[in-house]
Image 1 (cartoon, protein in one colour):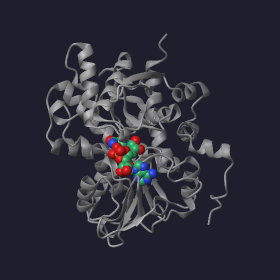
Image 2: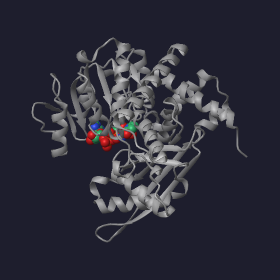
Image 3: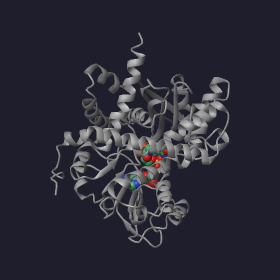
Length: 428
Ligand code: NAD
C-alpha cells in the first residue's frame, strides 16, 4: 500500500490542486525528454494573451450585476486558437490558463491545425434564467470580440454551456461583423452550421481510446467493468457508446451522487431517467452511493468525466481500476499520476482521450468554411481514423522514450509545436 494519503501541507495541497501547475509539471517532464532549452520552454509555457472582462447585466428583477469573464489564448503557432467556454461559480484564471494550454497540446496530439484557448464566466447557471444567461453570453462575446474570429480564436461549449450558448455567440459576432459568420464557434445547432456527430464526438473519442487501451491491459469489452464519473455530454454519451459495445457499466454519477448496479446498468434507461428527473438518484434497480465511494468501486476501467482534481494524493491509493480513461480535463493530479504509474495503472491522458470533441469541432469549422456538410458516417469514420492514428503515435512515443502514455502524449504534442515555432521564428 502506498503512503500517498500522508496529509500534504496546505501549500502543497494548493499547488497539487492548481491545474496550471499540474499542466506545467507534465510540460517540464516532456520538455526534459525533448532536451528543450530554457528560452523555448518559456515561449511554450507562457500564455500568449489573457483577457479579463467585466460583464454588466440587467437581471430579471431589474437589478444590475457585474460578472467576471476570461479568455486566455495560450498559443497560436499551429493555427487559430480553439477552446471551450465554461460558466461556473468557481472559474478562476489559473484554471482557464491550464485549460488553454491543454487545448494547445490536445490539438497538436491529434494533428489538427489549431492552437489552444479557453474562456470562462464566473456565474452559477442553475440560478440564472434563460434571459439572464443570454445577456451574459452576448455581453461577454461583445467584450472579447476583438480577439475572436474564424482565423483568430474559435470557442466551443464546455461545462454549463451548450448549443444555444454557441448560437448566441455566433449571432452576436455576426451582427457586429455585419455578415453571417458560422465558423466563429463550433458545437452549434445543426441548423446553424453545426456538424453531424459533434454532440457525441467527445464520448465517441473516449470509447475509441478505451477500446485501443483495452488491448494494453489484455481485456475485451464483454469482460470489462466500467465506472463513469459524470453523466453529461462526455460521461453520459461515453457510457452509452461503451454499453452498446458490450461493456458492463457498473456506475454513473452526477453532481448529487452516484448510482451502482453490480450486474450492469441499463444505460439508455438511466439517461432517459436523467432527462426526466434531472438527477440520477431514485433510478430504479440501482443503489445510491456518495461521490467519494464511486471512485473506489472494484472495476476494470474508471472514466472520470466530470471535472478536475478528482484522483488526488488523498484518494489515489483506494482506486482499484487497472485502466483510467480521462474524459474530463485534468481529473488526475500530477502527484496522483506518479502513484498510479508506480502501481502500473494505465492512464489514457485527457489530451488524447477527450480529443474527439475538438477533432469534430475542427470538422465543423472546415464544413462551415466550405459551406458543404458531411454525413454522420463520414464524420464518425474520420474521427475514428484520427483517434486511432493519434493513439498509435502516442503509444510509439511511449515505447521510444519508455514513459507513460501521458508523458508520451506531451512529448508528441510539444515536439510538433516546437517544429512549427522553429519554422516560423519570432515575429518582431
Ligand atoms: P456537462 O456539464 O455536460 O457534464 C458534467 C457532468 O458532471 C454532469 O453530469 C454533472 O452532474 C457531473 N458532475 C459535476 N460535478 C460532479 C462531481 N463532483 N462528481 C460527479 N459528477 C459531477 O460537461 P461535459 O461537457 O460532459 O464536460 C465534462 C468534462 O469533460 C469537463 O472536464 C470538460 O472540460 C471535459 N471535456 C468536454 C468536452 C465536450 O465536448 N463537452 C470535450 C473535452 C473535454
